[in-house]
Length: 264
Image (cartoon, rainbow, N blue to C red; front, top):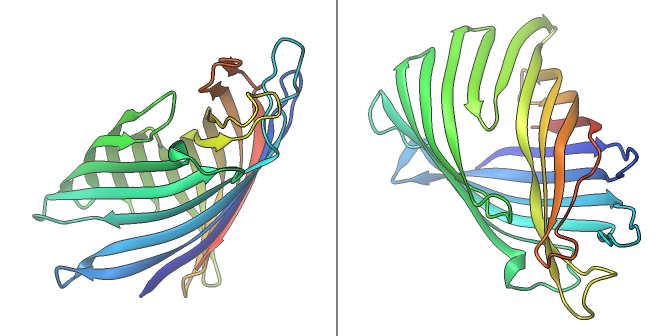
């Protein structure tokens, strides 16, 4: 049974002096499959695809930090949120995918990612989450995750979580559409294998892109299932790492971004 189909895009400005612009477009669909004959906590299977359009870096003498104009993600994600007791649950997720410019797919193009969190529900309005994320990047393989989810009332929610905090507040309802204010943070980026113009002929390099993001905007949800968001934010502490060490890294200038998404 299909649970959701989703499309999102984020555009990052290319700002001097160390220019690196991006346009990330991703789409996916989530299907719910009964697991152990339990309809309340099904297995969620999500195939997805993304394209990342890159503008830069600008190669300079002695710092040939070149990248291809685009890379891709093609993945299959599985998630399960078991509820063992009324107060103890979990959030489990595993993903396998190919992350590459598709010039040549090598072993490093295939990445495994996942997360595992224990969820302690002290009340319907207060939960504690603790666990770990497996990112499979050059910079960070494992990342501790967790924090507190507090919902003081039906209009406000605080997700005081690392590495993805979020605050939402319902502003108004227009017709059958709820509008919410949203503020969030994120550890962004990814990892891909690429063919570089200034690399070793015939060799494939592996690159990380990492950043920290803060954003604010509006979320909406209509009766009937249509939902989405619009946001603007800042990406900082940006870095590009090269597995080959040629060069070891490149630090793009802090930039601004805008994004939007719609799902059903």
